[in-house]
Structure formats: structure tokens, C-alpha cells
Figure 1 (tube, rainbow, N blue to C red):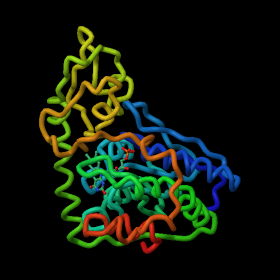
Figure 2: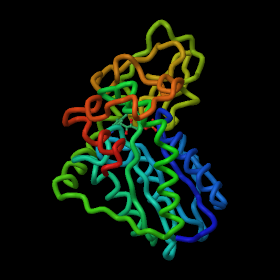
Figure 3: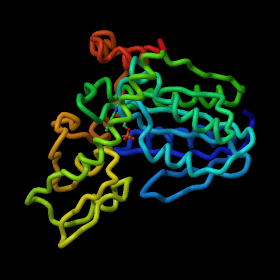
Figure 4: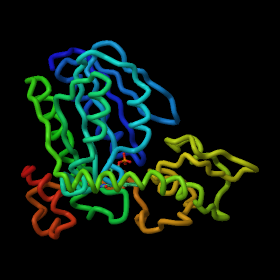
Length: 290
Ligand SMILES: Cc1cc2nc3c(=O)[nH]c(=O)nc-3n(C[C@H](O)[C@H](O)[C@H](O)COP(=O)(O)O)c2cc1C
């Protein structure tokens, strides 16, 4: 894996994965790689060509990659043994249901001729259903550079890391693909309140390019990825879900809420704070037990 050139390609809805991708960019440059970084955004196609290592990073959606990741891979031409690294970014960590979230991506890349030599899960604050407790979320942001540097070190050393998801996880992950159908209905039914002033923030920030302004009000097409960027990010808090309300964290989601004060691991009892089945992936990640 000693290519000197790395193309970082990422999909992010609400900024967690973007943060991860930027962190990789910095770490790769620090060790002397030449990098270019590309966001899968509003169907702007970046064509990965040549021999540069592909570092593909995406937010986990329902135990899978979001649809644009698959579409992007499908749009690529065939290559011969180009090395690739696949990083998934989830709120829950490497736990049942999530462990197969790279399987379809890797299969598709291998079909195109990529040699996936490394895969790993990184954890960022959850942006759906249940919010990550603030101290844990702050710690996730704090440990990110260290976790990323470890992966870049592995890449430099040529460490091979491939995982084997359980059959059950693969099945659950397949079922999770139904989310892609639900996403389209979710987007179509987003409610616009009177607070909307037609500023167009949602139009420019929707990764799917699914929102247009009609008579100064947003209109939603059929391409929603359910990334929640518009609902959480609207500067006037004017958007809310018409269906699937449980996906959306009631208090909202903004990564900037978790910055500010530095949390030292010694100050937080991770076992206590991340107790329970739901948070075991976050617990293991923060305690380096993956
Ligand atoms: C529709 C949707 C589905 C998600 N599914 C999962 C999941 O299956 N497992 C998980 O651990 N996190 C899941 N998450 C949480 C995100 O993967 C996580 O918060 C990630 O950091 C979001 O990245 P982003 O801010 O770049 O969009 C989901 C989030 C959304 C919006």
C-alpha cells in the first residue's frame, strides 16, 4: 500500500464523515502522501482514475452505505489492482447490524478491479434516533485524530485488515436496504413551517440536490437520502419530518455542540456513561477494545 498518492472520496450528510475525511487528509499529508479530496455531493461526479489509492469514507445508513456511494462505484470504469481502503462512519460502532455495512461496497469495488486491503469502522456522534451523550460525543471528536493516525500508520506499513461479517449481519444489512426506498418517501413528506423565509440554505446543502425553491418555498423531489442535513441544518428551524419522525433527534443535531471544552478520558467513566447494549460499540471504540 505504498502509493504516494491518495484520492479521498467521501459521503457525508450532517458533517461527521466530512470531519473524518478532513482528518484523514491532514494525517495523510503529515506522513508525506499527496492527497486529493472529493465529496459525493449533488451528483457531481469525480472519476477515480490512474493508480492512486482510493480511500472511500461514508456515513453508515441502516447498516449499509448510502445510495450515492453505490451509484458512484457503479459509475466507475474497470481498473487493474488499484488499492482501496474502505472506512465506514457510524453512531453505534462495530456491532451487530453494522458489521456488514462495508460488505456490499467492497464487493462492488472488487468487481471493478479494486484491491480492498483495509477496512475499518470509525465512530462519530449519532445523528439519528438517539443522541450520543455529550461527554461521549466530545470524546469521540477528541479521539478521532489518534484513531485516524493509527489507520494511516497501518496503511504506510502495508497492514492488511479485512473483516468477516456474520451471516445474520449480512441479512440484516440487506433488510436495511429498504431504508433507501423509505428515504424517498421521507423526503417527499418533509414539512415546511411558516418560519421558512426561502433563504435556500436547504437547497445548497442537500447532498442529493433534491430540493428546489418554488415561490420562495422548498420543494422536495424523489431523491432524498434521509441524511437529515436539511432538517438539522435549517437556520430557521423550519423543516420537520412528515413521516418517520423517530429518525430525527428531537433536540436537533449539530457537531459544533460537541466541541468547546476538551474532555479527558480520565474525567469520564466510559463504562458507566456508555453502559447498556445500545452503546457497547461506542464503549469498545473509546476503550480501544475493537
Ligand atoms: C438514515 C440514517 C441511518 C443511520 N443508520 C445507522 C446505522 O445503521 N448504524 C449506526 O451505527 N448509525 C447509523 N446512523 C448514524 C450515522 O451513521 C452517524 O451519525 C454518522 O456519523 C453520520 O455521518 P454524517 O454526519 O457524515 O452524515 C444513521 C443515520 C441516518 C441519518
